[in-house]
Image (cartoon, rainbow, N blue to C red; front, side, top):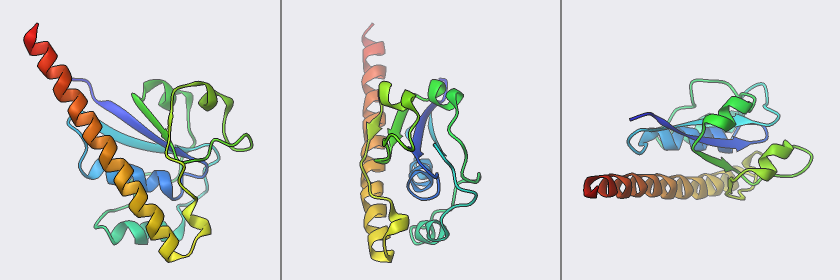
Length: 147
């Protein structure tokens, strides 16, 4: 089975998308992995992102904030944005392809309690996506057995 990719996108790839990648890859659906990128990536992750992930027993992904590429878009089975589809920061192609937008506030602009609130919302979304992918794989396997 070929590995499928879930792509998490935000503007800077410094908070939300990095956390989503780490959360997803902690316990991915079989045959899946996550990557993340930004439309205008920052030089380094937000300083609180690593601390907030450590509180959950997670680590930052092994890459610095990285630029979203056409290849990432073309090879990802699921594309999720974090509520950053504004004209100033989002390439037009994201507005015309099928993406899921979780509409999460940017935690970099919030205090620690707000950052944790966004992190909890993100955890719930990531877990829901993982369950959806597992169920989809089970349905496809069941259909294949009946053929």
